[in-house]
Image (cartoon, rainbow, N blue to C red; front, side, top):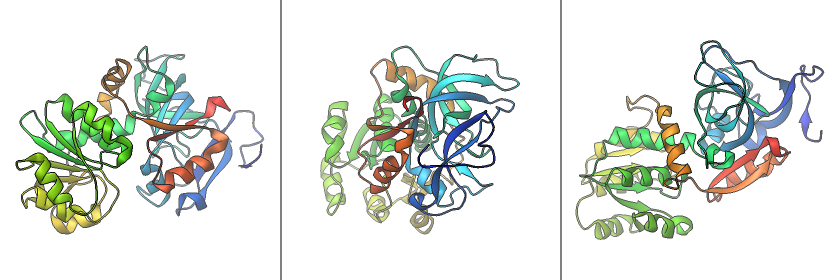
Length: 325
């Protein structure tokens, strides 16, 4: 097959396609499609035939060396598919069930951008939710929910979500609104109207941010969640927070946060919250929650998806469809 590099497992019948890297570097330089042995699920794990795989900025960070570990490593942390094998101790799902979840990227040499994937967190896909929408949910929901929990957002708060056009930011706005908080959101043009319709008060990025947010909020902002790509904006966010950096939490600008006293998702003590994925999958099935999907691609079109993801102009989730090839 064009574009596939054969490895030592290619001559065996139990092989699958996977997108992975053997060295750290820029994703476009180090990623390639290979044939590799289909992995077996270990204890407490399941294996799925991948129907859809959501790509995230975290995938590009993994390629560059985030959470370094044994190589090769795969990309594609968000998965939906059909269970085709279960490990020891797994009783809550069975072969043939449709699930969404997160891959065991640290314990496997491949990940979700494959024909098969090993999951260590999962939930059943509810009726009314398709595989593509299901694969858009896990990482955005987990990160946004955990961040909202870390900040302690309640109905008593005004929350600023900076970067609400990112998928984590888009999820965080919805979660905060569900809690009854008043939400101010900064975003570009793509999702501004949609966020307003949801109930957020929206303004743009860029120069004059402090003045625009202050005017829009009309009173002090209690808490701030920064989900935007790194842009040097943390000093402005601290100013909006009344000069208190502990009222600001960033999921991206860890280097600047360390020097400013801003909280980060790496330094908070909150455990992973994949336990809420099933709840939000049901919300999505009921039309009460959504992560926008920008484009879908056959697995063989992965390079196009990577290029768009790297451009910073995806305007929503990019999803690979291995079963559609």
